[in-house]
Image (cartoon, rainbow, N blue to C red; front, side, top):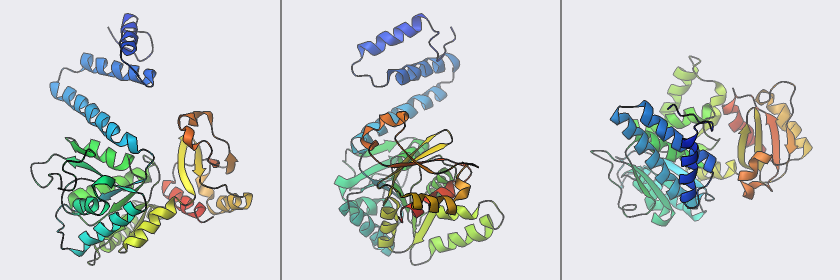
Length: 342
């Protein structure tokens, strides 16, 4: 029998409905039904055990990730990337400790990879009670650091891709310290996700050491990547480079000074704000960022859409709406920075 996601499966649909009725407190049953159908279809279509193990372990890891982070959904969180090989006596390690400690004092929580080096510095500065660790099981280098070893917010992943989802999905900002292949991989993935709109806009701060690690990287990006036309000049809005942890914190805090969050509904972009904009301020945004809007459209204040009812605690926030040009996510970051100045 070929299964379908539409309710055309006869007795199978009835059995799935009965199963969900017998399990207490199923949220969003239509979505859970599709997940069950997906699992059954995988069993029909795939006879290669390794592929089924991949699907199974992926879902189990993501379910557990959601379970760990869910109680802290309303807390702002900062993800910290950096080398596992940075030693505690190095100045950049101490910069990371101070950076995460100051963020924790301001009410933020810290997410790290849970290993040694910069990851341990981030957890050490914030303290175990303000930290998450999304660790990866490796044959070397990546045992959980002593700060997070017995913490209930320690997650051990088999797959890098699940771990990367947690790093980005659960964070409100990201700070990247100097590091090796793993750090650069994580940083470049975040660049790509922000540039293509596959994650919500968020501040990305590259915190440099006294050797100019990120300054030299910037020269490469400017001369070789921008110089060959592989990126646009607006993509430089995506990140900030600094050696000062206090400046890094200001960049993060300023990003949410008036901007709160956003939702896309096809081409319509709803931006939720902490305070209402005046008509003059909206006009200034229109004049400065015409490329963000589809032709012949305006930026308008608006009420919450019916589709936003799933976030009831945000319904009272003021909003603006625009028909978004999806080619300009880098420019969207600059737009957010501008509206935070009002």
